[in-house]
Length: 318
Length: 291
Image 1: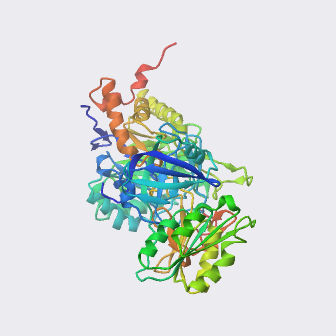
Image 2: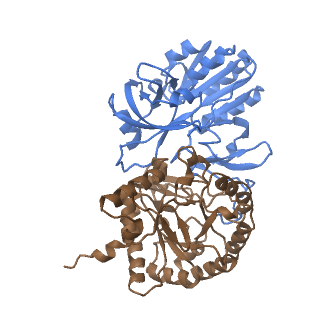
Image 3: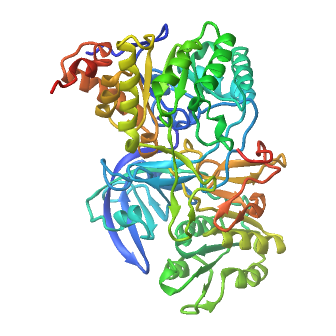
């Protein structure tokens, strides 16, 4: 038996496996395949203040070991979420990490305020501040591409939710992710989720035009796993070296198996999200949990926590 | 979980060519028992380490709850990409990962009204099973099958067994009447006094079918073939604009709210040039500049 529990900014979760935002809707659909309360946490689709139709279609293109998506943050808005989705998640015993976004920094604040005022707020174990969705018209809205913007958004969310774990979700599409991580942590984030999709594009070679209606999209899936591992390793490494304050990292990017999850954990992730793999296998998040536990046992460890960041202690010396 | 859907590791037990298509029979315990005409299955392609992660959706051609090998489902596959080519190359006894049944089935009329079933290409796949269910309820059933050419028709022989009358059209005249299904549909609907027109096929055809049905006072129930990544309602890629009972247009998931929609509720004006736009009056539509 491996002790799979993990602590994220004061919130103790029974295990480190989560869904990834935008890959699991708001729970009901996946609950047909496994109880979503089995997971350490359920991460919601990003919720914004107002209802949002998203982008036109095609919204998706399959790519080698991955896909591009260009959803455009479709969703019902925070009021419907608080009234319907969150109470349902609470009713099935899920621990909920709510992904939030806004068109402006102030709008992030409004979303979390209404979230905190809702009836099922007790089910919320934290918020994940999505400052890195690439599918927005104004590329300046990818707050996580800029340290000052990241700081502004996180500071507002922190101020409105003084007692709840706040994670900032970062994009790897930056020159120095450690700099953005530093800004988010300085603004009061308790931890970081890494990484969001990478901006990508596919051309339809029959029509010789962009395949996606939104032209560009976010690349996800096993194809980007090495990017996630690199980003986690750099940021966790900076923490170990004392260049960043110690804070938990949630790893996400291309996890399809327990072995994949172990890679992110060894690089420094205290929890792991399963995203695109869910489209291939609806039971993937649940399966990855079992496989990760078996992997940790295979290596002879009794606690999940003992493996977090272990690769930093084993860097080959030439 | 008792949720009307299962994920099973199935086994291919039969595969045969049908014109330009491949007709597969898969043992998939639990799927057939739950399935109704109009629902679909989502098949994983390429095996457990496949680089093609997205499931391929196929409407269920036939479902047999108990056979020699256990429950089976049949699907018809057109090989046009790496995933569908992988499926059509499978041999009997190869494993196939099946999720299903998915989506909302064709609604059946409460009274025995005459019905016309329209299939474009292999879009006809679910209609024979539907025809049997309708006739079991006392409905008179006619079918209209159309395709670009004879090899792209599916199930003409089966149609003659399943329906009280069959009309065939091809774009090139290689079988039946030269032209489109919409060229002949009006006279069939009028002759049979059909109350419901069921259709499955490409968007352009479904739009024409809806228009013809409306002109003759019939209700159109259309099954769409939008591309999907997951089939189970979590990826939000298969959305299309549909107007609800409240008169509000929303971008709805064709995998869970469809694939069958009332034709007069679909915002056909949003589709052109292979793109599906978000109508300006849709709930949550972007203001100028998009999002």
